Image 1 (cartoon, each protein chain N blue to C red):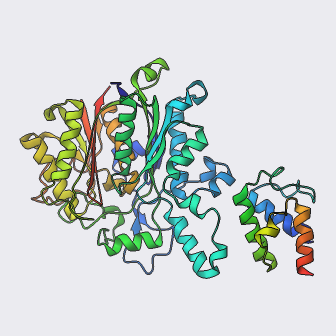
Image 2: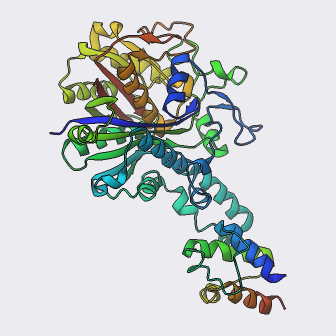
Image 3: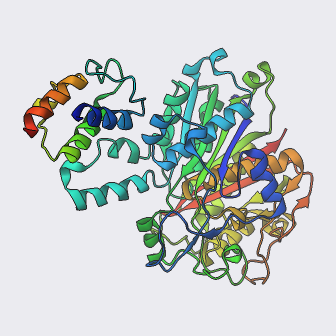
Length: 410
Length: 76
């Protein structure tokens, strides 16, 4: 079995582009949530979201390439470019047949889909763009990354709703651990703040309607939480086989040591009321890493700010960590970034790795009113300095998909 | 006049400089258009000139000159 380490980070987020901007915003508790500007929300009950600001695709891609990608794929390629630069990776020195791209996206190119449905309705079948399909299909998160950087190893997109990126990272970890690849570009990309998508999530009653106070709307684990906030962006990590990383003198942020993946097999949107699936995912990640639960210092929670998620994720943590659950630092960085859906696990794995690497734990902001059903230490409002050895990141998706990864300080 | 309009549409679609395009310029060989670009260009030309370009005609339109001459016949 090979050891797997994180050697590059690229973040395109609602609270900053690039590792430094993203991380500094997280530690300061900056909110990326505001009024939706990408479309007119006058017919929508939800008017708030966490958009990526100041993203100019031509900073990363030439104009023609950018025109052929939906925004989610632009995010994936841009974040990959940042991760490769951050990791000081000279691809021409490496065997690209041994480098893969395994990236999560929950939804894919829904902005393109909506535009082309409108075109079909307005102008007819003969005016649907030939680029519609290749821009919309969700596999282009990985497909475009492989093409842009010439990576000829395994290339695939994983789709498990809000757990997509964590599954992608976990499966990439196994690919390297079992010797199939030396390096994988992994994480997630999403761009679904679009009229029909927001309307759909609104109809599910999944979103916060706290339109009058956007920066306070996402309140994970707080008693007055009322739903999640749509976010967008990409979080990309370079996973690399340990010896390979050492040989090229890479900076190692953290080691990936465990992965657990389960299904609730229960309901299309509601979590299992006993949190059995989420609990097992956490336990499996600990077993995979052969780590005693008392060695874990921090959990970057899924923490969406919905009533059910936060209550049942708390239960899952208690199921596994018993009394020790109260000694853990837990935080939901979604309180600042909003919910990046299929990309959430990407930016949250980055936060988890940097927490291990720097000894700084980002807070859960907007935590004001305790909820008796959520009674753990959610690192409220202010970052905490704590040297930790192991940290986890959880992601739980509609469809009952649960994924947890376990990282170790290097 | 017709040439300039066709040239500008193609330059816009392919994100290339209009100045370098002549009647002899080949869309695929010189401007690196692929089959998807070609379909988009035909759609843009159909919209601009209010004509219908069947696939069997589109296949023969390789150079800018082919397009200009074809549209000249269609419009007149």
